[in-house]
Image 1 (tube, one colour):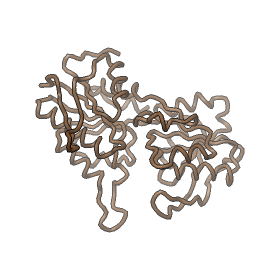
Image 2 (spheres, rainbow, N blue to C red):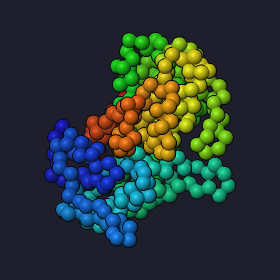
Image 3 (cartoon, one colour):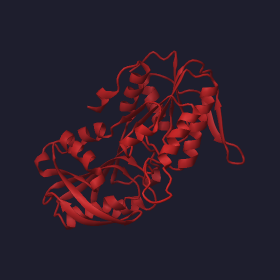
Length: 319
């Protein structure tokens, strides 16, 4: 792909520059010339070293750990581009941090996802391009267009090809009731049955498996979720389908590899044979284990950017 780039630029901050370089290479464009660092007191320093006046600008940055640093880098870069008279600014946020804080679960809770949405608009973003928001309703927090790409457009074809000779004995599993719609869509695209794990969460990051709805006995199980954070839910689900359900083996497929705390150690010690992730978040080398397989999102994001730039619909990328 080599698109007309005389009035288009792609910039990146520090969260995932390798992904930005891959996307720019697919589009046949150089990365924009910029520097993002810190002053001696820890404040973010941004320098845009070329003119962006009137240009269609895409800024790529996942707001993953360190979440607040990466978020501020992105917001300040958007502000710098806006003040430099960029024509349109699209924030390309493969992983959108704070998305799980999308409602009040108890008295006096903040709705941080809405606050972050307001910050993007205040900074000067004209559009958001992201992937697998934890709750699709978050799109409604924005007063600007939000394109929410689907990780299953990459994960499902891989799984379908990987298990094409045994799909009759493969089943997609939702690790909780909140992920049923995602798992159902995944199972439809791959061509498997569907099972659901009913769990009761006792406190944050601790869950108890209660029941398996569906037959997983002697089957290959694919646990489907939007993200893997501490991996507690995932590893408990893997243990349940093996120990309670009698599954033959268990895999996992998720879009975002947050992998905080002891997540990697839990995965290594679990029943999981392989965990499939996308590179929406840069996974450092020390967290890459033989059980992790990471697929690139550069292809689908480059197509989405090309479609936004040329004013074509994004919807064909969902099918």
